[in-house]
Image (cartoon, rainbow over all chains, first blue to last red; front, side):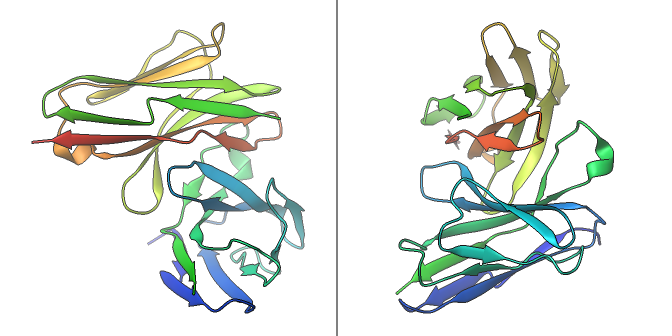
Length: 115
Length: 110
């Protein structure tokens, strides 16, 4: 099946630890995105990548890092510098070939809790 | 800075009711407006609207864009318990970046 997978589904982190959230897609999409969702709020963009080996900061990139070594994969690291990391993290991807259509497809999300 | 605002924040209705969800946007170099439905996990795509006044319809759901008023509405007729979800709208700009609203949480009671 084509789609986007995220792992783990739930993640618990102690303060001061870095953790990495996985996002993989087999849709052959060029662009990938990471969003953060807090209760009662919409999605806020952390980082995005439109092409392999290139990525850009979103609105709330501080305390996060990403890499895009392969087209299918866009892992997000939540570093100890992120002061309030407890949230629901969503990964999305989009085919640039679709031109003006910006229909992003979302993965199932990772819920991160800092203990 | 681009901004999208949704109202109401939450809504409780009974099965069979009709609901209207609102979305207003301030997006520089606006290209389109998207609606998503989010149940427990991943938002799923509903509609993309680019032209003012043209209704898009899928079953009991329909949506329309008003570029003059910088707004969009999502209508759901004959609501069912399965319509319970968070409905998100997002404005798409010329850089193909989405700015999401805070969502409307809809609960449909039997």
